[in-house]
Amino acid sequence: MKPKLFIPQPIPQVAVDRLEEMVELTIYPHTDRRMPYDEVLEAVVDQDILYAIGEIPYDEQTIDAAKNLKYIAAMHGTATFVDKAAATKRGIPVSLIPKRMAKTTAEFTFALMVSTAWRIPEADTFMRSGNWKQNQSMAFQGTRLFDKTLGIVGMGNIGTDLAIKSRALGMDIIYNKRSKLSRLEEASLSIEFRPLEDLFSEADIICVTPALTKGTVGLISRELIDSMKPTAILINTSRGLVVDEEALEDALVEGRIRGAGLDVYHREIPEVDDPGPSERFKSLPNVVLTPHIGTAARETRVEMAMRNVDNIERFLNGQRPRNMANPEVYGEEAIESEVIG
Image (cartoon, rainbow, N blue to C red):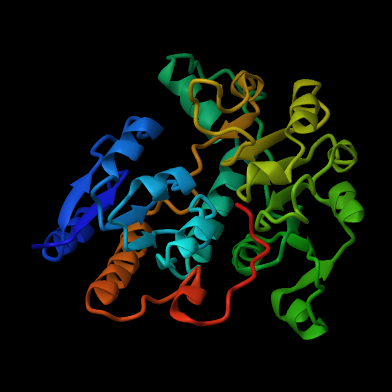
């Protein structure tokens, strides 16, 4: 008899096909909605393996409800939505996938920056509304990017790849990072370090890319936003909680900065007691909004799914999965992580 595996969200078909050779598979099929929590609790009761995805919470209650649970495989680099302590208490391994999506997220960040600066979504809406009369020579004036200063907050893998792409466009690049890069690293990327306060007052475009940790919650404060140039644009593909969202809304509504491109928000999924992203953002033409899709390249999602499937196959074959979140269940030293989202 095949073990039972549950997935609370659709995944690429190539991964489904491979899993069906190994397990009895149950998948929540809808792409137009999030699986309700009460249905998740009901679905996991007789499952042997849970596939963690889409930040659908596998909290202590969910893990306790899964009486036959033996393993959780997360299609995620941190899976902060999985209660690892609850899993560890029951001796249940939790595996992750390697954080190799940085190039995809950097490319998306670059695209969001270009789209926002050139007002592409706004112009697309204008065209679709039948308003084009070829009389708007002074309308839809965007912001060119060559010869502008890009400020990157968080020079990790995403920030580094973004710097390479932006440098090719002819931008000057300044950055801020908790640990300053070496002179050789800075020279190889043609970038210069700035204290955060100087970066915000100097940059024409600011891209926020750090991981969400206790140290980065609220990192982009009202004071920093208020110090931006009136012609500046802020792009956030990190996490919503890194930015003081209310301060950003105020600056945009009052026209104190040119615009923003946002892929992440304080509140993301509209639910019973949660309205989701701010309605003020939705009302502003100078804000480009996307639904947290920084890794949503078709090819990348297939790679992510197949890495997770590989871990599931290893577990079923009696092998230790790769990229363990709680290696202590195998008698190894626990991993300490600053990442909280």
